[in-house]
Length: 409
Image (cartoon, rainbow, N blue to C red; front, side):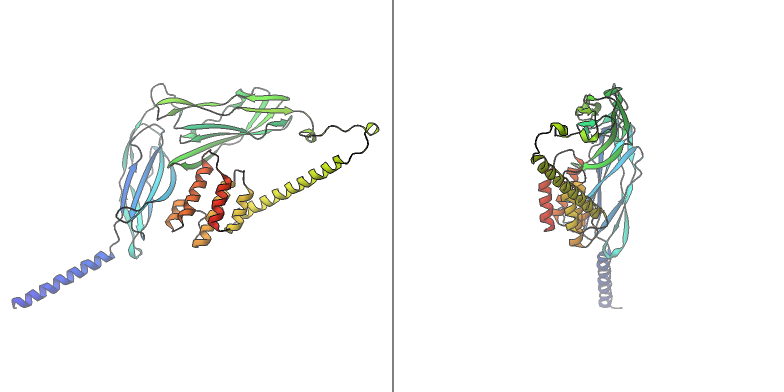
């Protein structure tokens, strides 16, 4: 065989190998990278640490993370969020967990697994490395059952007066980035004395997020039944907690509670009118009480109508996937109530779903952003989430106006 023919065959073979390599490269999924980190490497026992799994991926690679068992930690899920694009142009998605170590020493976070779908729909798995963290015991002299992390304590009564024989609702909130689920129920009996009976409900726990960290609220509800009339006063409640930032015990202090207990029938509770004189001693008939009574009756009717409308709108917003208009009207009617922020967020999600044709009601703001929703909607949902879980006053009118503009109502 001539050298020319051998060379030609070698060139054809090399070309075939190059084409095969190019085709294999085209079929391979784009690179996916997982970056694992903790927001701090050394913490105190029960102190919150945030674990982040940052996924760098092409726009068409959909990833899910299967977390490890987190042995030795109390784990709370934080919302998945979309981060600014990598300098390479790839997208970044972050999975997070808030971890609270339950024992001291060197703790290991086991390796986990990432599952993603690449180009062509092929599903692939990728290992995610584990981590180690050093957990310090609480300093000497600190009680072992103390809460660890920033803490707020709030007390709110349902009214400033109650009729003798009736009950007054009282709510006590422990809130912060500490392990507040371990908070014991306050012993109100010793603060109120023997003249007030205390009936407690089972506590409730809610988890939110503020500034990238888990914010937990443990709520205790009580019914107070006073045994005598007069003024009842309860001094502010106090709770010690360990602040990792200072390394010392700090004290959270609530508001004071005071209310009046009065005797009499229900119709005498808040009557602004004087008792009417007997018929024999009455002065000549005056028209103004009749007019005032008619005005009060009219105002009462309007109040009942408004309350009925608010109830109907709230039920309509909870049933199924409401229209953005119905959900927005329900939120508008709930201004000043505890349901306002959740109903307004429902209206935003209803608008996102109507605009982009997917069910946005069960999704987090980050998941909604990952599906292509406008930044305006994502920012609004994050603002509503912060206002809902953080005990800070929010401008409800401004939130309503931003939602109205987004929904184009």
